[in-house]
Each structure stands twice: as structure tokens, then as C-alpha cells.
Image 1 (cartoon, rainbow, N blue to C red):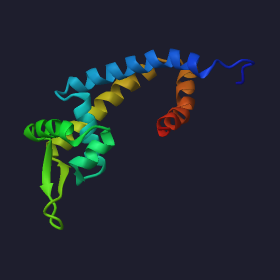
Image 2 (image 1 turned 180 degrees about the horizontal axis):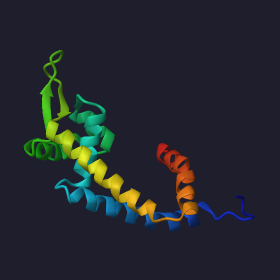
Image 3 (image 1 turned 90 degrees about the horizontal axis):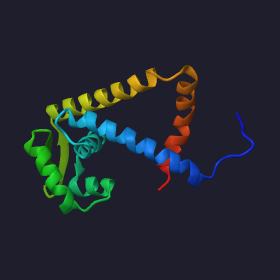
Length: 146
């Protein structure tokens, strides 16, 4: 469906931003209900995707300094969700890995967030659900751009 006039990127962004912020806030609440912060869940997901990731690599992926990240990793390690593992090949290298409890909490976070979203989507009309589905590729492309 093509309209004669399309709103400017600034107008669309002005309407999209508050909707995304509210979605993110609600997803953070779902995460907090499990006893971890949204940031901690993100760190667990990054390590889950790349086991053996160093603290520096994790900091780079998050766009923060390694010293700033160190405290977060310490808390995850103290909580029994993350392990620091010394490399067998290079004893100077320390990689991060999830513990079984870390994997379990990450699985619960993902399931809880997905369930929350699915519940909201289920209450949309068929047309609105279709529009959300059609928007997914464009939303993914927006995240690819730096």
C-alpha cells in the first residue's frame, strides 16, 4: 500500500521512539522479575553467543571500557552465572563462559520476554499483526546501520 505522501524520517522517528522506549521498559521489567538486570541479561547473551569471549572483547561489543565492565562481570561471577576461564593455549588470556545457571537464567529471560511480546501481539487485530510482521525486516536493517 503506497500513500501519496510519506512522513519524514524525523516525524516517523518522533512517533516510533516513545513506542520503542515503552516496549523496552516493559521487557526490562520482565527481566528484573527474574532477579537480573536487563544489562546483565545482555552480557549473558553476548557471552552465550561467543563462549570464551575476553573481558576486552565483551567491553568492545558493549561499547564501554573494560574497567567499567569488570564490576558487572564480577557481579555475574559472584552470582554464579558466569565463569572466567584461563586459556590452555595462552595462559594470559581469560575467557568468559556461562555456567549452567547462567544458561538457565538466560533461557528464562528470553522465554519471559518472548511470552510478554506474544501476549501483546495476540491481542492485535489480524491486520495489525500482519503489519508488525511486515515491519520486521526494516527494523532489523535499522539495527545494522551504525
